[in-house]
Length: 43
Image (tube, rainbow, N blue to C red; front, side, top):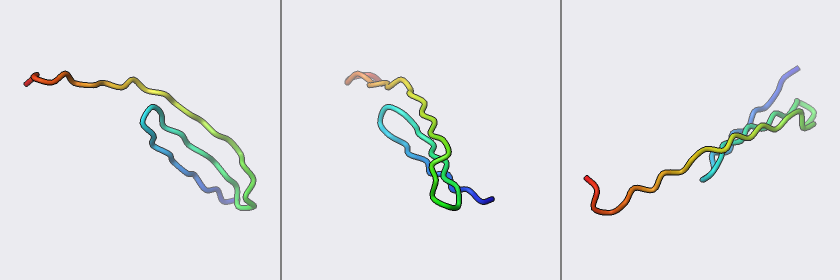
């Protein structure tokens, strides 16, 4: 069986969606990550 993996790179997380060849949703995984905002004047 063939599958399609869709990747979504967002501002606060990454998501992977797995769909089979019939269009059925098999699984969704999401991983959040920390955001870093540099302060002005650094460098």
